[in-house]
Length: 152
View 1: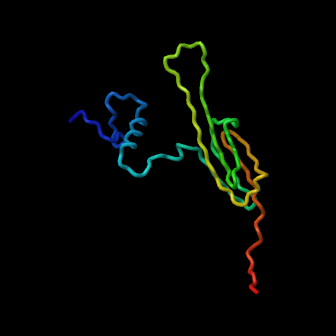
View 2: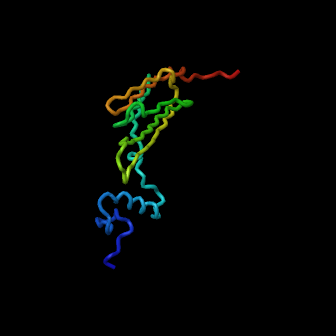
View 3: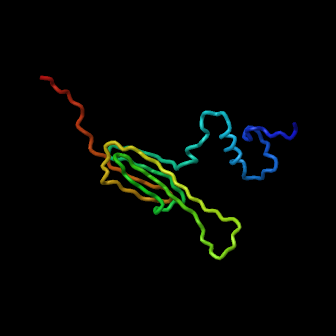
């Protein structure tokens, strides 16, 4: 029994026999898949980008943290009354003339959608500064305050 490995490697400091460093996430993913935990262990902060939304009387201010993302990789759209921010990245090196035994490419995409009430969609401004996308959305003027309606 001395050679048995615990089912969930995160519950102890033991490492899997024969596995070198860097395989912890792979084994944790397998443990999560075959485990009986009904709640997902996914971390949304790790799977997508962080967004902060501020509201003032006159505008919404959306700040999305996108470190290392170029503005060409950002797709910013308005659909109906929602702001959609999508990132599509492809990383590939072009090394012609090499005799590859192993070569990898990486492609990723992620997106967020934010519903905007009473926004002036034609006046949205966006800029990318030091890895932070800043989107300013002016608001429509507030409707008149509630008033009593007399019934005839």
